[in-house]
Image (cartoon, rainbow, N blue to C red):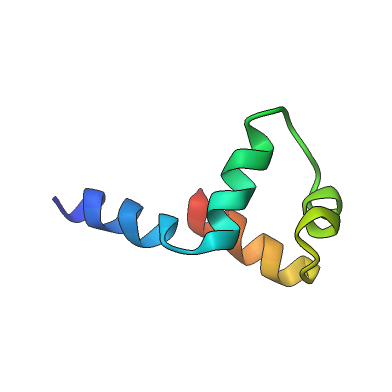
Length: 52
């Protein structure tokens, strides 16, 4: 149950959901994700770490 709650918390951020949707189409580097989301590189990296 703890793992399920952890996953749900990770997915509640709209940018994380967008990253997952973007990556469904293939691999991208952080700079490409950053460009699509219009957020800073550290923000994208933080989101990716959470999703990992």
